[in-house]
Amino acid sequence: MPAKRDVIFKGVAASSGIAIGKVFFLEDDDFCVIRREIPSNAIETEKRRLDNAVEKTRDELKVVYAKINGVLGKNYARIADAHLLILDDPTMKRDVYELIDNGVNAEYAVFKVIDGIVRSFEFIKDDYFRDRRIDIQDIGKKIIENLLGKQRKAIASLEEGSIVVSHNLTLADTMAIREKLVKGFATDIGGKTSHTAIIAQGLSIPAVVGLKIISSQTRTGDVIIIDGNRGEIILNPTLETITKYREEYTLQFAKRKELEKLKNLPAETTDNHKVLIFANIDNPDEIESILSNGAMGVGLYRTEFIYFNRDTMPTEKDHFENYSKVAEVMSPYPTVIRTFDLGGDKLTKMGFLNMEQEKNPFLGLRAIRLSLKYPEIFIDQLRGILKASAYGKVRLMYPMISGIEELYEANKVLNKVKQDLRKKNIEFDEKMEVGAMIEVPSAAMIIDAIAKEVDFVSIGTNDLIQYTLAVDRVNENVAGLYDPLHPAILRFIKKIIDESHRVGITVSMCGEMAGDPYYTPVLLGFGLDQFSVSSAQIPEIKRVIRSISFVDAKKISEEILKCRSKNSILKTMDTIYTQ
Image (tube, rainbow, N blue to C red; front, side, top):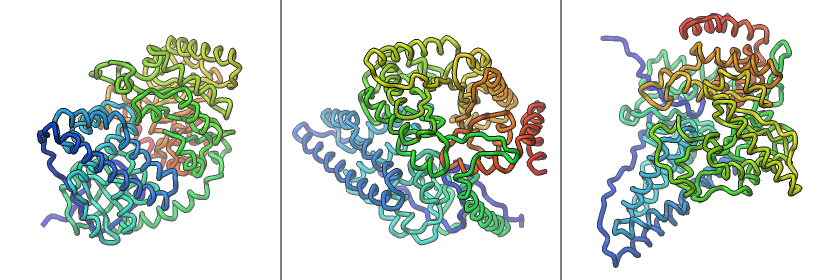
């Protein structure tokens, strides 16, 4: 008989940590939504059914809000607020009503409208916003459940110490499994920025999501290991593997306690070379979290959040109130605000444009291109940013710059806005720094020219890798080719840093590569000035920086730049890291 082998499933590391236990399979309460014709004299009754179901869903979300608030505080509880915003989206309600007016039953109307919204999210570039489609699906499903009078009962029979496996978990499910002292969970769908994953991180529940088929491969009672650090699930592991993971769990618990001591210490190498660690945020609610993890500023404020959950364009006041809130709390630390990085499809939904879905939106009319084509929306955001600069150390950053002409055009608009504010005696920071995201290969190639026109640059590795290697990182067929250690990527990064330093400006990195401690010594050796990462990644990045000398980091980087292939780079890194 062959020796027993571990069965490993790879997914997305949603919440770090290790859990070993028995599976509790939480079956998805699926149901079939049938299209029924509604006579005209029953349309108002059908709308009342819908309103009652929406109201019941709202009450349930308020309960979830109260639970999250009681355990994790207001910052996390605002996730439930975001679900309430989806529920109250006037565009969604209007579209559902319209289908009912056309003689369709409420359940089917909700299903069709939600399905259309979810499909539109597939073309959004940013992971955070693409993960919002799961929230929309959850809300739609909950409304339909309430229309049908269904309730999820299986979770009530959860046993303490179980590991939950399911197709998906709602916010309510996640809070319920916390109450049952569940050790961890694994789901077929979801991403690192899905709200269920964020709550799991807050609760310190190890979780792996995006496993695709895990719910069909397990049954209640199976022994399972959740490896939330590597994004892996080991089903029915060998005794040897269980022993190994128990030892790793003990070590990581001790390590977590050590990391907590680093919060107020500088990101400084053993030979006194200092760098800065900033945080990436999507909205003002995240400030408390990043400060508690020791961030020295906001290195990337993704302003796209303000454009979601609404059917009208945000006003200058909306922009100002969001940005000034962050700038004021973060002061004297800097807040780097990136102008919106959206495609025309989103603005079409708000009634601003009438643009058909682009076949390849990643290469389409988006980000700075869209801002320059429609300066009226750009101006409102610039006015909000400039006015917020009077409340803290604000820096402005343009996304997706591909050539020097775009910088000239963007600065021309910015200078006109400044002139207008001066005429009206509106206060702003006259010395506010302006920078550019380097995420397009053409910009990386001419960084010597771009660096002379800006006050700082930030490397967006997610897109730089995607565009340089011609790999759509969310396409499962080619995702394996998405490689931060490709020699071309490493040489681009070194070139960007060297040319920027040559003219005296600083370089930050705000892509996923900056938040992976495996790459930290290399980036440090390249001369990167600032790491901008998610708040949870700050302590570990700081630990790595404080454990190495700048001299050694430079040697590592020099050796790697000599390598011609990924395999040779990996061998070099493994050799050096194990010394």
